[in-house]
Length: 231
Image (cartoon, rainbow, N blue to C red; front, side, top):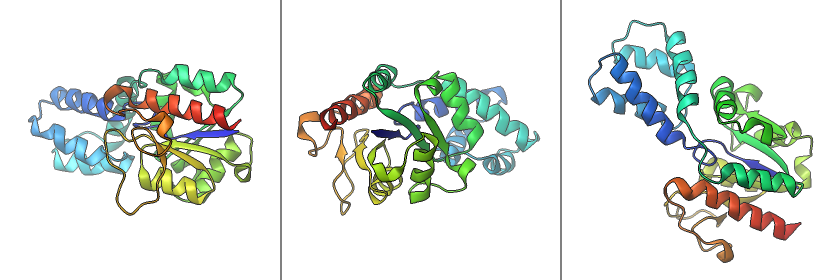
């Protein structure tokens, strides 16, 4: 059975990694502290090389945007950490015979660098990054590409674990996958179909407070319990 995982703020703490890198970036250039929020606000959802053309202008920098992007890729990759329990959870799924994949939106170099520096890459059978395949979640083609990268057919079914109700949960359900939502202390959005998730009524046997650094550990544990139950 296939289990696809989102990467940022599902398996790794991208938010904390970005904030740490932005703080260092601003200090290294002796920019005002308010520049940290400018950087984080621009890059919070996703980061691409074009964002550094914008940041170069608004921050009054003279450096080449390409160099700024490469600095970001290396720096954030060093700054991010897997949430506690993620590695153990993924290893447990592999031992149980699950096919594991990454289905993430973003640029290929930064997403793969984060997987490499956190040493998570070897735990996955396939990695699918939106910029490399030319389509983003919630499009079905992204999930199809992720399944193909893992050597399986999406039509065989499986699970998607992620933190975004729209791109991860709605997209995966439309593609025929079951879902586990990493709530991160949030309430499920009104008007959206229920998804199996950490810290929510669905799958009551797997309720937990999905807050702070334990949220991805809870997500992986809940996923393991659900998937083992279904085998």
